[in-house]
Length: 114
Image (cartoon, rainbow, N blue to C red):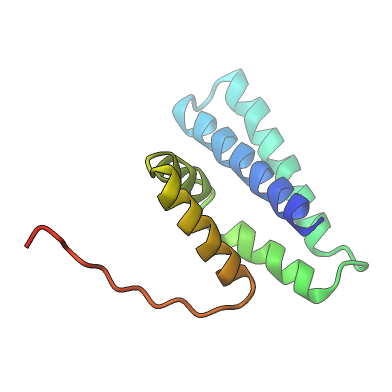
């Protein structure tokens, strides 16, 4: 359930970023007026969700963090994961599970070219 809420916020944030980009790309057009209005509506949803009294403070704080993050970093990570071989993706999946369980990760990078 939590991942659905985060995904919803993430996709709305992406939609807002694309709407704002359209407004910047085509200022003064009818489309810009429409997308500016859509952006306002999306931001109303953000304010409404974050102030919803039946969500716990931890849920609202998680949403605030998602809203403050880079909307495009998720897609960047996905693109990079596609470049990994199956064994590397399996290791990364296990690593992500450990991080989500609260584990501490220490990274040592070796350069085998030397």
